[in-house]
Image (cartoon, rainbow, N blue to C red; front, side, top):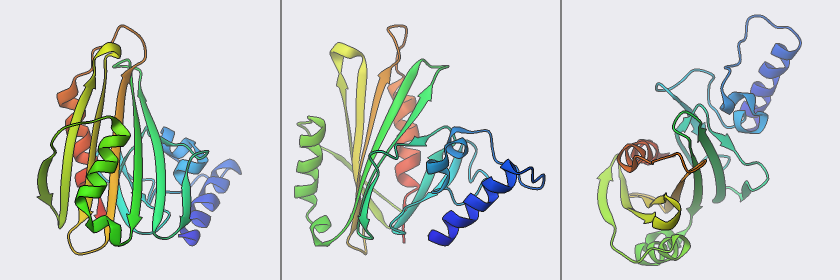
Length: 201
């Protein structure tokens, strides 16, 4: 992981010093130095997304090209725990998306009931979760609307089927001003693209 960070920093330095063979994308993910350290390549993996690699080396996932990681709140004390926040501001739709991921690799991830209770408490949810499987992971998924401020929270717990790895994934959606209407169906599809792209290593 450190080698990858060094290579990306060298690439950015070459551009600053006038290297003409390397082009850094004009996207928020690569214009922000901290965020760029987590991207596997300057080439989009899918349209609108790079591939993010966790600082724990425990998983990868798609990452929006206009996403920016909050370096002030990033937490990675060891290889089995990581807290990551990133935001995407969509001025065209007049809204913002704030994401939070909590990654763990320990025995407690097997206790689905405990993890869902912790997630529900964190987002103020009192209800059931939809459950589905995809690529050797099991997904527990729900959402709720915050009626008085035209906002939503989409959230889920992703558990590796054959390992003690899990991620709590929270997406908070809100308007930049009153002239906004969130299309929750579209935002759910984006959320599902991100969580289904998670590959535990």
